[in-house]
Amino acid sequence: MPAKKGGLGQLARRTFREQIVEALRTSIISGVLPPGAQIVESEMALTFGVSRGPLREALGDLIKEGLLVTVPYTGTHVVDLSLDEVNEIFSLRTELEIFAFRQVWENRDEAYFAELNARHDRLLASIASGDDESSIVDELGLHSHVYEACGHSLLLSVWNGLRGKLQLYWAAHHRAHGRRGPLPEGHKRYVELAQGDDLDAMIEEIRDHMVRGFSKTETFLRARENLK
Image 1: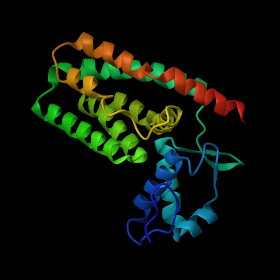
Image 2: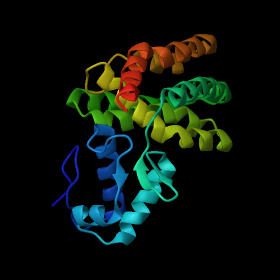
Image 3: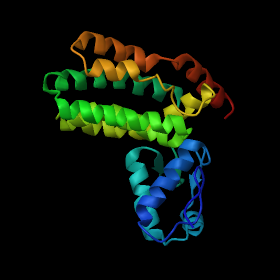
């Protein structure tokens, strides 16, 4: 039967690789597989009812995504996000997103706006359904739009390298604030300004957007580190 939402379970015999990736990603984001948890191939193959071939392919995808890491002699583990990493990622991400908007600003068109609004609508639908895992994926999709549209392949590659850790951060952010997913109004101004004429206002919103609610999340992550 299909994997249960928020957990692990045997998969229907179709598109094994994609299903394993989705099930493991959901389990990592939801905390079923906590930071630092070891992934044992034999156990996972038994859990999903698959051979090790598609399982290894799926694990490779999640390693590329940044949700898993393989350490020599210790195996594959769920990434454990430290406070130092969070600070580095968000200082870098702020400048990356500003740079992306500078690149795309004069080339925005109706197709760009339509896709931006469609991604925002998907995020709002995930938030309304109370689906934290989907809302994290959809929030990532919303922010990915400018990187995909700006036509800068190296910038997109750098952004893609941050995706896994951003998902882990957002999951911790939501837990710290005691809610399922971001606030419905959280991206309203971001989306409005991304369709406007004032690039300076857009840049200011990006800076504000990145740090909003961070202090509470920082406290949550620090407390988690102290328990280790």
